[in-house]
Image 1: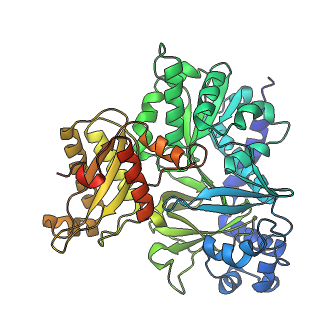
Image 2 (image 1 turned 30 degrees about the vertical axis):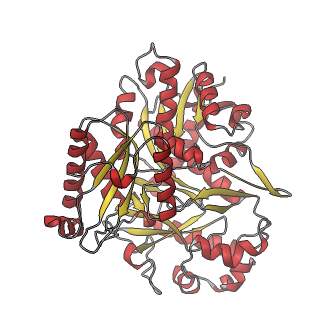
Image 3 (image 1 turned 135 degrees about the vertical axis):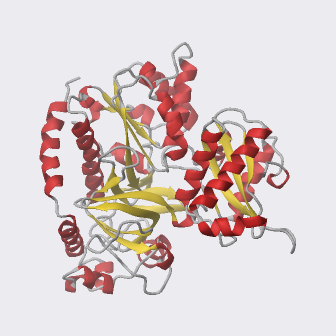
Length: 520
């Protein structure tokens, strides 16, 4: 295989010069106006008088915030699956399927050719930042492994397809780049996740893997399969892929998985790099180390707005953009994109840790806001508490979810239930310690939680239920959502979804949630 890293290095030098001198605010203004001009003759553009827009303020006056359901009802469903000049010019060729992580309902996210090109440019930025840290890299001297969904797309209408985003992207890889990507098409088409993992693991051990990417929880399942196939080797990535340089992860908060990945990386020369992709667009990539934030990609067909989280459902919310965003504030992220999303409420929440250049961290999801009793917890606080609790009992969390248990009678108090899959067996004393540290960490981070927990006045202590290894993967498989882009919901608000998980765990021989687990 020809080592294409020297060509990548030439591109990286030019791109780094662009990034070093970029005026992010001006770039974002130009991106918005270019998007508006492009879509001015669509039905959405006509309805909102795009031809009259001259600046960001004009756009914000004409276009109100919308969620997926609003776009679906007003602009997409009436002509679905053949969206022609609805909110983006031409015919939308693909729909990225994504499920609401708290409800499980499937969404069809329009995916244009322009968005495909945008994602490819963002992927190159991952390598640009990698080469800046590792100038002697030979990352394109071998294969780049994308652990994603099936490329077996469903044809909804003539020339219109739907499937996992990772599957769509796999079909869009240019012919000249395909020799550098793994898996081959025959493996990529497989829809049975367990069979696919087995096949990919065996095949990958025979080739030169230089980079691997995926969602942390699915990567860990894959690495466990490698260990199963090669039990005689130390359980380290360097044992399986000695030339590995880069592991790209994204899609979920990394803190609960960090210890496990650090163990896997011992003895390896590879680095971990976090990214922030979504079905709606590729948003940011780490340009520094872990915990130092992700650099917002500002010149790639997406315009960003930022709305204070507590205002996102108000009739006239405050709408910031890069020109007036502030560090330290928790914002709902709003996108306008080259796939026809306009002031679209993505559902993620972010906080800037720097503005020149814009660098942010993902703090959670609007739907991951847990406040059944007025405790106002955000996902970032929950993730931090779970990671701290796992460290306290010297174990690791493979996956988890949390929901609220409401009081069954007038004198009872509510509490939170954490359903946790640990990487190793835990005993009752460890569960009690885990729950105690979890509770204390949340109280330190969040004053409202502390007030509600004071003297057990407003809430009882959290209950923790440990489930067997593989439980969440089996549940996701039973829901038809294993692998690829699918993620275990971190916070469950939907009672039907909670009851489905309840029934599934009991069906595997576990007691009802309300009769097992522990508090402290």
